Each structure stands twice: as C-alpha cells, then as structure tokens.
Image (tube, rainbow, N blue to C red; front, side):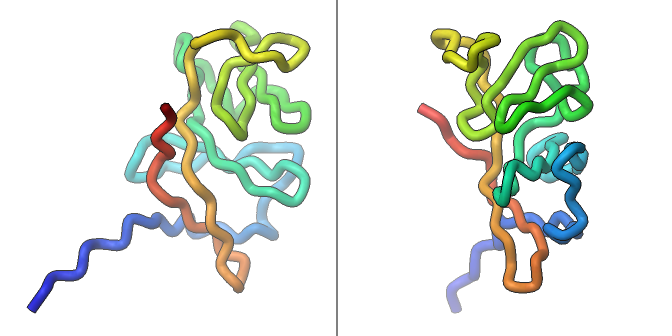
Length: 119
C-alpha cells in the first residue's frame, strides 16, 4: 500500500474575520516566525522579523502592501518580499522576506502553504 505524504499545509487556528487591517498577527509556524497581514481583501503572510537585524517587522508601520521595520526603517513589499525604497521602488538584489502562500477555507479558516521558493 502506498503511503500518503503528509499535508504540507499549516492550520493557523485563525479565521480571516479575526484579522485587523491595522495590525499584523504574529504566528509561529513549522517554517519559522511569520505574520499575517490583511491588505485590502487579501491575506498575506511574511516573516515576522526583519532580515537586517531581526527587528520586529510585524510591529512596524504599514502602508498598503509595504511594511517598514520600526528599528532602522527598512521597507519591504509584502507581496514580493523584496526590499523597496521610500517610493516603493525595488532595491536591486537586496534581502527578501520569506513568504508563505495563504489559503482561506470556505469557513474563513486561514491555512498556510510552505514558504515560496523565489528565483
């Protein structure tokens, strides 16, 4: 009998209706410390701490899909994970945030897929 591989999805135990567009929701996952962000009608998931000096990125200020680290003002696009400048332009091949795919179940429950493999 063939073995069924384990489901790579992670149940966050959170419902979309419990998210606040003004604040990130910190969450521990099998892939590390992540945060859930409600951006408009979309739920995004990115690493919770800044790759610069491990500042609490999830506590930073957010404008649309851009998050700013409260320690040294590094900015990242939550959709691409790429570091951006003040105007939102990409900064070359700079650091990139880990991000997970987000799946919303019919009942609103939030599930995460493994981190995206960026090229």
